[in-house]
Image (cartoon, rainbow, N blue to C red; front, side, top):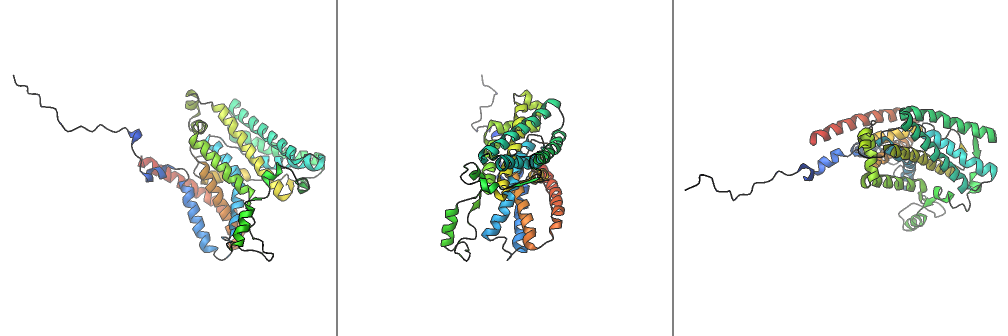
Length: 376
């Protein structure tokens, strides 16, 4: 009896490929990166100043070091602010922490004869405590971090002024340089690196020299090394560690993350501590560089850090952003600030440009995110 069933086909039927293992085109990956807008902005700002500041010395070795140093100072606190914002929180007390940390370093060292390393460890310990308190208050009370840290903005600034006036009768303390010689910890926050390399480059004629035959740029300021190091570590943490996944999850949906076993409270406390510690790193670099502390230091730095992070592509609602984007945002800030100086534009307009740049960055980031979603 002949069967009417057709013989099996010899041509194999292609199984539908799981979308999770499909190869994603490079342009789609690029569109999904949060720092794409900041990278485009950096290229545009660079191109603008290469043309407008041509012949002014902005892009000589000395000029490059100048704008990189400005970017580094902001980038140090912007890196920590980026991780905290990705985790879904804000810290408006960063600037005040800079002022208080400087006072906590200067008064024990200058007025009471402490070694600088002990005074700096005191500042770092107090910063860690402030971050821990901020994180616990946000977690336990349920108050927005904007409100909690706004309160600490005033508390820390008031403490800096009050402690300084109580113990010294003034708000500025100088004489730090007299205590720096031979202090191993102070050396981490002062001076330059690669000085031998720059001397060799000057000998080869690659860098200009002064009348004494010394290079006009003697080395890389240590603040730039701190900035690049913190950015690299933060990028590695975000992209290569479970803790980085916890940060994204905590900022994206804290309840879902908590239900999945993410220790959201501990993650957020650690991020608040990191922002306070980064502000203290900033203060150490300033105090070692200028040889003094001032209670007014760090004014509005918290807003500049947030601007750098937003320009870098982070969402104000959390769960999205990158440390590289924050570094690019800080670089744009440094380029603009020094570019205005080199081109002779009235610096009174700097804040106007900064505010406009923030709005443009937010609009551009929203546009790119929509395009990224459409490309999926």
